[in-house]
Length: 415
Image 1: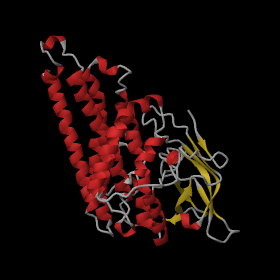
Image 2: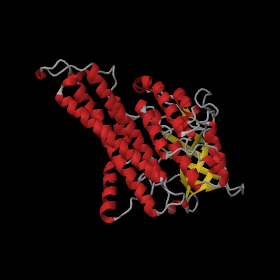
Image 3: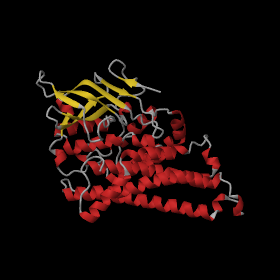
Image 4: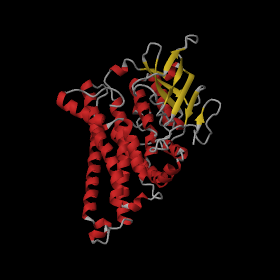
């Protein structure tokens, strides 16, 4: 399956409709709407994964609900939802369908970048776009660069126009959300090798979104390629972030909090499906002498262990969000480090539990759980793919190095 969006083949109206969204009134309202949407998305999750049916209709429903704008500050018309609420929304939706849950992760990350580094005019414009229902996708890291921090996409100043606009050239990958987006942000370097965040309209001439995502997990995120061929970017859509990136900020911890919330949602779905299958379908082991698999003391012990770890992961996620919510408007490097470490701790547990629960499910539920009709392997495939965003071994290192040597974690979006 492949879909290409470029200037000569504009996206059809049923795929990227004009922005339109209701307004969320409060954090409590946000959680209520998230639960309602999760109830709608969950029944079709296995089928979408099996057939790799891209969830255009579901994403329209999701963004039109108003949930994609809950982090917009009150000063700009939003509710300024707590990071705890944002994380909970991601967890709720990801438990229903983690591909749908992952698609807006970069949307929220970009709104946070704008809140921290945008000019007053840019904040007013882009926050209003989000409140209207516009979706921000992502042109992810280069696929063939040295590492995720190695930026090779170039933004060349248009010297002839004299209006501060740029021409953007490069190829990006891991572009979660771009195929569904109204705006496609990207990192780039200017003529002096200084970092920029540039925001491109999805239908800008020279911009192509290519659905070449072929991963075995998170199959419907469409996290493929974005190609920029001298895409003209007006000055108003460019954030100069050289000085900002040298200052303490919450960009990395917020990004990682959302990642951890998605993994926690995957874990919850796997635990719930394990309990559901054992309770209703599994047969007891022949040597047990029991009538029901759910009375097997070894299964009971393992389910207890999964539930305990799930509650622990939820608690650490809530604690990490609380650390972010308690940060002042202007933070210190020490506070930035504390937030990164708190989120790293949550990321360790959510990563390990999502993998454990999605594998343990089959051991406890038995052979019948492996039948294709159930598609329960999607939990492990989704967990295995999504948790590769940022290696958990480096989270252990960050926590230990800070505790032992007082060394803060690196300052970037993967920390």
